[in-house]
Length: 247
Image (cartoon, rainbow, N blue to C red; front, side):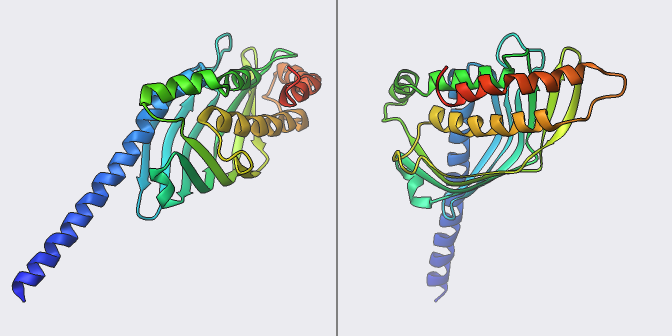
Protein backbone atom coordinates (compact mmCIF):
# COMPACT_ATOMS: atom_id res chain seq x y z
CA UNK A 1 0.00 0.00 0.00
CA UNK A 2 2.82 2.41 0.90
CA UNK A 3 4.55 1.68 -2.39
CA UNK A 4 1.30 2.45 -4.25
CA UNK A 5 0.85 5.70 -2.33
CA UNK A 6 4.42 6.70 -3.05
CA UNK A 7 3.90 5.87 -6.70
CA UNK A 8 0.66 7.89 -6.95
CA UNK A 9 2.26 10.75 -5.06
CA UNK A 10 5.18 10.72 -7.48
CA UNK A 11 2.82 10.77 -10.47
CA UNK A 12 0.88 13.69 -8.97
CA UNK A 13 4.08 15.62 -8.35
CA UNK A 14 5.25 14.90 -11.89
CA UNK A 15 1.95 16.09 -13.38
CA UNK A 16 2.04 19.24 -11.24
CA UNK A 17 5.61 19.96 -12.33
CA UNK A 18 4.66 19.35 -15.97
CA UNK A 19 1.78 21.81 -15.73
CA UNK A 20 4.07 24.43 -14.21
CA UNK A 21 6.57 23.88 -17.02
CA UNK A 22 3.86 24.08 -19.68
CA UNK A 23 2.44 27.26 -18.13
CA UNK A 24 5.87 28.85 -18.23
CA UNK A 25 6.48 27.42 -21.71
CA UNK A 26 3.33 28.85 -23.27
CA UNK A 27 3.64 32.17 -21.45
CA UNK A 28 7.26 32.62 -22.44
CA UNK A 29 6.44 31.79 -26.07
CA UNK A 30 3.69 34.42 -26.15
CA UNK A 31 5.91 37.05 -24.54
CA UNK A 32 8.89 36.27 -26.76
CA UNK A 33 6.72 36.17 -29.88
CA UNK A 34 5.08 39.52 -29.17
CA UNK A 35 8.39 41.20 -28.37
CA UNK A 36 10.15 39.71 -31.39
CA UNK A 37 7.51 39.96 -34.11
CA UNK A 38 5.31 42.79 -32.78
CA UNK A 39 7.61 45.57 -34.06
CA UNK A 40 7.63 43.99 -37.55
CA UNK A 41 3.82 44.11 -37.59
CA UNK A 42 3.26 47.60 -36.11
CA UNK A 43 6.54 49.17 -37.30
CA UNK A 44 6.80 50.70 -33.83
CA UNK A 45 8.21 49.71 -30.46
CA UNK A 46 6.28 46.81 -28.90
CA UNK A 47 6.99 45.41 -25.44
CA UNK A 48 5.06 42.82 -23.43
CA UNK A 49 6.12 42.52 -19.80
CA UNK A 50 4.49 39.19 -18.91
CA UNK A 51 2.18 36.45 -20.21
CA UNK A 52 0.66 33.47 -18.42
CA UNK A 53 -1.20 30.65 -20.17
CA UNK A 54 -2.62 27.67 -18.25
CA UNK A 55 -2.87 24.87 -20.83
CA UNK A 56 -5.21 22.64 -18.82
CA UNK A 57 -7.97 25.26 -18.48
CA UNK A 58 -7.08 27.56 -21.37
CA UNK A 59 -7.12 30.56 -19.04
CA UNK A 60 -4.44 33.16 -19.37
CA UNK A 61 -3.45 36.80 -19.02
CA UNK A 62 -1.03 39.33 -20.42
CA UNK A 63 0.38 42.27 -18.49
CA UNK A 64 2.13 45.46 -19.45
CA UNK A 65 1.71 45.65 -23.23
CA UNK A 66 3.14 48.86 -24.68
CA UNK A 67 2.72 49.79 -28.34
CA UNK A 68 4.80 52.79 -29.34
CA UNK A 69 3.86 55.70 -31.56
CA UNK A 70 4.77 55.74 -35.25
CA UNK A 71 7.57 58.17 -36.19
CA UNK A 72 6.64 61.85 -36.22
CA UNK A 73 4.44 61.91 -33.12
CA UNK A 74 5.28 63.35 -29.73
CA UNK A 75 4.16 60.71 -27.22
CA UNK A 76 6.40 57.70 -26.62
CA UNK A 77 3.44 55.34 -26.80
CA UNK A 78 0.10 55.05 -28.55
CA UNK A 79 -1.46 52.19 -26.56
CA UNK A 80 -0.95 50.73 -23.10
CA UNK A 81 -2.72 47.64 -21.79
CA UNK A 82 -2.07 47.09 -18.11
CA UNK A 83 -3.75 43.68 -18.03
CA UNK A 84 -5.97 41.57 -20.22
CA UNK A 85 -7.48 38.20 -19.34
CA UNK A 86 -8.39 35.58 -21.90
CA UNK A 87 -9.98 32.18 -22.26
CA UNK A 88 -8.64 29.87 -24.99
CA UNK A 89 -9.95 26.55 -26.24
CA UNK A 90 -7.23 24.35 -24.64
CA UNK A 91 -6.72 21.91 -27.53
CA UNK A 92 -6.30 24.76 -30.00
CA UNK A 93 -3.12 25.83 -28.20
CA UNK A 94 -1.38 22.94 -29.98
CA UNK A 95 -2.76 23.82 -33.42
CA UNK A 96 -2.18 26.47 -36.05
CA UNK A 97 -5.77 27.75 -35.60
CA UNK A 98 -6.06 29.14 -32.06
CA UNK A 99 -9.63 29.70 -30.84
CA UNK A 100 -9.91 32.41 -28.19
CA UNK A 101 -13.33 32.27 -26.56
CA UNK A 102 -13.17 35.50 -24.60
CA UNK A 103 -10.84 38.46 -24.08
CA UNK A 104 -11.42 41.12 -21.43
CA UNK A 105 -9.29 44.26 -21.60
CA UNK A 106 -9.84 46.45 -18.55
CA UNK A 107 -8.66 50.06 -18.20
CA UNK A 108 -6.73 50.36 -21.47
CA UNK A 109 -5.06 53.68 -22.25
CA UNK A 110 -4.81 55.28 -25.68
CA UNK A 111 -3.07 58.42 -26.85
CA UNK A 112 -4.74 60.22 -29.75
CA UNK A 113 -2.60 62.85 -31.46
CA UNK A 114 -3.99 64.63 -34.48
CA UNK A 115 -2.83 66.97 -37.23
CA UNK A 116 -6.17 67.92 -38.80
CA UNK A 117 -6.35 65.12 -41.41
CA UNK A 118 -4.02 62.58 -39.85
CA UNK A 119 -3.39 61.04 -36.46
CA UNK A 120 -0.97 58.69 -34.77
CA UNK A 121 -3.60 55.94 -34.56
CA UNK A 122 -4.39 56.30 -38.25
CA UNK A 123 -0.69 55.87 -39.02
CA UNK A 124 -0.56 52.84 -36.74
CA UNK A 125 -3.59 51.38 -38.50
CA UNK A 126 -1.92 51.91 -41.88
CA UNK A 127 1.14 50.05 -40.60
CA UNK A 128 -1.04 47.16 -39.44
CA UNK A 129 -2.88 47.11 -42.75
CA UNK A 130 0.42 46.78 -44.56
CA UNK A 131 1.54 44.00 -42.22
CA UNK A 132 -1.75 42.13 -42.69
CA UNK A 133 -0.69 41.21 -46.23
CA UNK A 134 0.98 37.89 -47.07
CA UNK A 135 4.61 39.03 -47.19
CA UNK A 136 5.31 39.94 -43.52
CA UNK A 137 3.27 37.01 -42.21
CA UNK A 138 5.01 34.63 -44.60
CA UNK A 139 8.40 35.91 -43.48
CA UNK A 140 7.50 35.36 -39.84
CA UNK A 141 6.16 31.88 -40.59
CA UNK A 142 9.33 31.01 -42.48
CA UNK A 143 11.42 32.15 -39.51
CA UNK A 144 9.33 29.87 -37.30
CA UNK A 145 9.47 26.98 -39.84
CA UNK A 146 5.70 26.57 -39.67
CA UNK A 147 2.53 27.85 -41.38
CA UNK A 148 1.29 31.24 -40.16
CA UNK A 149 -0.71 30.75 -36.97
CA UNK A 150 -4.26 32.02 -37.29
CA UNK A 151 -6.52 33.30 -34.54
CA UNK A 152 -10.27 33.33 -34.03
CA UNK A 153 -11.74 35.51 -31.26
CA UNK A 154 -15.30 34.68 -30.26
CA UNK A 155 -15.71 37.74 -28.04
CA UNK A 156 -13.52 40.70 -27.11
CA UNK A 157 -14.55 43.25 -24.51
CA UNK A 158 -12.86 46.55 -23.82
CA UNK A 159 -14.03 48.51 -20.78
CA UNK A 160 -13.12 51.39 -18.47
CA UNK A 161 -10.70 52.77 -21.02
CA UNK A 162 -9.51 56.30 -21.45
CA UNK A 163 -8.06 58.28 -24.32
CA UNK A 164 -5.65 61.19 -23.98
CA UNK A 165 -6.39 63.73 -26.68
CA UNK A 166 -3.21 65.63 -27.46
CA UNK A 167 -2.27 68.51 -29.70
CA UNK A 168 1.08 70.21 -29.38
CA UNK A 169 2.02 70.39 -25.72
CA UNK A 170 -1.59 70.38 -24.46
CA UNK A 171 -3.68 67.34 -23.65
CA UNK A 172 -6.77 66.15 -21.85
CA UNK A 173 -8.14 62.70 -20.95
CA UNK A 174 -11.70 61.53 -21.61
CA UNK A 175 -13.47 58.20 -20.99
CA UNK A 176 -13.54 55.71 -23.85
CA UNK A 177 -16.91 54.07 -24.58
CA UNK A 178 -17.09 50.35 -23.87
CA UNK A 179 -16.57 48.13 -26.89
CA UNK A 180 -17.59 44.53 -27.59
CA UNK A 181 -16.47 42.68 -30.72
CA UNK A 182 -17.62 39.21 -31.67
CA UNK A 183 -16.57 36.48 -34.12
CA UNK A 184 -13.30 38.02 -35.26
CA UNK A 185 -11.87 35.64 -37.85
CA UNK A 186 -14.79 33.21 -37.69
CA UNK A 187 -15.88 33.60 -41.31
CA UNK A 188 -12.30 33.73 -42.54
CA UNK A 189 -11.18 30.56 -40.79
CA UNK A 190 -8.92 32.59 -38.52
CA UNK A 191 -6.88 35.78 -38.89
CA UNK A 192 -3.15 36.25 -38.86
CA UNK A 193 -1.67 38.33 -36.06
CA UNK A 194 -1.50 41.43 -38.26
CA UNK A 195 -5.06 41.01 -39.51
CA UNK A 196 -6.40 40.52 -35.99
CA UNK A 197 -4.56 43.57 -34.67
CA UNK A 198 -5.87 45.65 -37.59
CA UNK A 199 -9.47 44.51 -37.02
CA UNK A 200 -9.30 45.42 -33.33
CA UNK A 201 -7.58 48.79 -33.82
CA UNK A 202 -9.99 49.72 -36.61
CA UNK A 203 -12.90 49.44 -34.19
CA UNK A 204 -10.99 51.08 -31.32
CA UNK A 205 -10.10 54.05 -33.53
CA UNK A 206 -13.78 54.53 -34.28
CA UNK A 207 -14.47 54.67 -30.52
CA UNK A 208 -11.55 57.04 -29.95
CA UNK A 209 -12.85 59.40 -32.63
CA UNK A 210 -16.32 59.34 -31.10
CA UNK A 211 -14.89 60.13 -27.65
CA UNK A 212 -12.69 62.92 -29.02
CA UNK A 213 -15.47 64.50 -31.09
CA UNK A 214 -17.95 64.36 -28.20
CA UNK A 215 -15.52 65.75 -25.62
CA UNK A 216 -16.11 69.21 -24.27
CA UNK A 217 -13.44 68.99 -21.58
CA UNK A 218 -10.05 70.69 -21.72
CA UNK A 219 -7.24 71.50 -19.32
CA UNK A 220 -7.44 74.83 -17.51
CA UNK A 221 -6.12 77.73 -19.59
CA UNK A 222 -5.71 75.63 -22.73
CA UNK A 223 -7.41 76.61 -25.95
CA UNK A 224 -5.50 73.98 -27.90
CA UNK A 225 -7.88 71.17 -26.94
CA UNK A 226 -10.70 72.98 -28.71
CA UNK A 227 -8.58 72.79 -31.84
CA UNK A 228 -7.94 69.09 -31.16
CA UNK A 229 -11.63 68.27 -30.83
CA UNK A 230 -12.38 70.30 -33.94
CA UNK A 231 -9.61 68.44 -35.75
CA UNK A 232 -11.15 65.12 -34.69
CA UNK A 233 -14.45 66.18 -36.24
CA UNK A 234 -12.76 67.31 -39.46
CA UNK A 235 -10.82 64.04 -39.63
CA UNK A 236 -13.96 61.88 -39.34
CA UNK A 237 -14.60 61.60 -43.07
CA UNK A 238 -10.95 60.86 -43.84
CA UNK A 239 -10.92 58.15 -41.18
CA UNK A 240 -14.14 56.63 -42.50
CA UNK A 241 -12.50 56.30 -45.90
CA UNK A 242 -9.45 54.70 -44.28
CA UNK A 243 -11.56 52.25 -42.31
CA UNK A 244 -13.55 51.29 -45.38
CA UNK A 245 -10.35 50.53 -47.23
CA UNK A 246 -10.58 53.40 -49.72
CA UNK A 247 -7.16 54.70 -48.64
